[in-house]
Image (cartoon, rainbow, N blue to C red; front, side, top):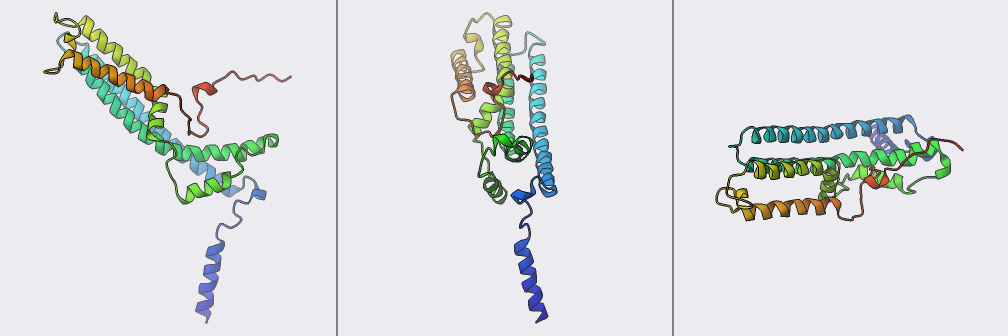
Length: 237
């Protein structure tokens, strides 16, 4: 009999675990503060992984360009190899960004609906259903940003300038170090004609420009976009 009561008591306690832990009347309680700090730590960890990928891409690109221009006998397709390598790093970083956005979106949700409200109640809650959305995200975490949108974000922030530098380096290598075969035959790679290589490079750059700058509805919660960067007036009337 005592064992049955113990089991029933345990089941009752289990069903009530977490009940009232983060009630609205409690405000930013200690439990919520620990939750926020944990999400900040996860976001910081994935942010560092993004930076490492960018650093490796820049370092490897610099090394390849240094070797490509170290001698006139070095072939131009070494620069094309750098473009392929940086593209691989872009794909890796886009995947990491999608994971990073899981934690960052939670942090922004807490900042917008808890801490911003605590600082200024006049603006009200940004999202009336933020508690339900956050609870569902903890129960079933899911990626909120598509791969194409992640690619566009990383291209705008880091990789578009890198690709432009590589394109300029390739054109310079072809014009300054090229043989007497003339343009575009000087762009040939082994048995691939120069015209085909040139068309492939043009198609690749047209593709990344479309991905990066086509009009779209951004699903990146709270991320500062170029259109959001405006002057800030600190003066008080």
